[in-house]
Image (tube, rainbow, N blue to C red; front, side, top):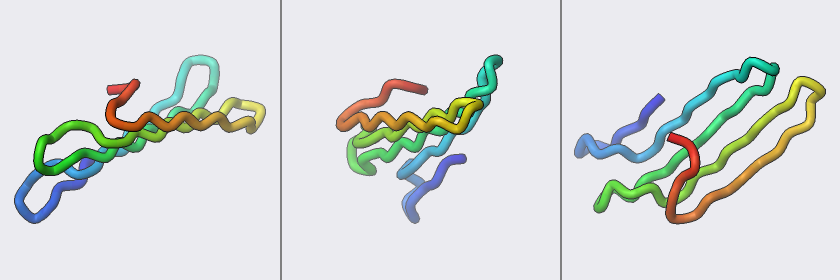
Length: 64
């Protein structure tokens, strides 16, 4: 899901998918509206046993 500001520029993008081994992956990417570059990306991975791992990336992104 993508969010845009009133000028139509991309502000935020949330992606969610599941892997074949049952993990749920959610990524939340925030963008600079002036340059369009990613400012921050949070990636959360929930394993089938309930364990959650979170990765924060500043000034870039790991996942598309």
